[in-house]
Length: 131
Image (cartoon, rainbow, N blue to C red; front, side, top):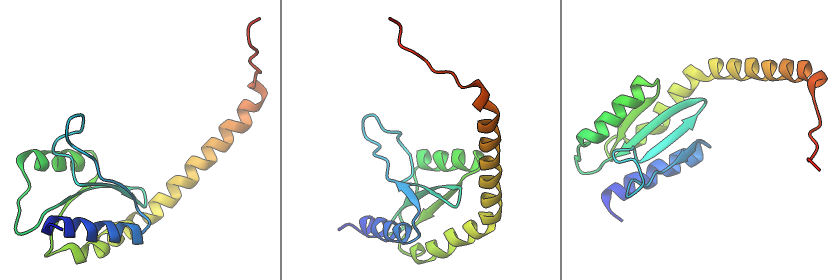
């Protein structure tokens, strides 16, 4: 396994342990070049994590993607073998800061859906196939 592969495996283990939603986009052909190695959602927060090893630096395109993530309200991180063990603490810190807002927002959305559903019950129509 490559040094970067070991960093990715450690990140993956941490994400699975935290029950985070994540994908590892494939960037060849139809993919989005410069996309982070991991796209993550945890506690309602969006993250892009780029993995590096042996002092590797992010490319200009990767840095542009990280900048775009931040401009959109997400969190972009670069993780390597020197800081991967801090990732769990970092994710939990952001999640705890956001947890109350996340739970409150989910409750508000559920209330709104319930109100809309109860109002629309009178407007339910059955669609029949044309003969």
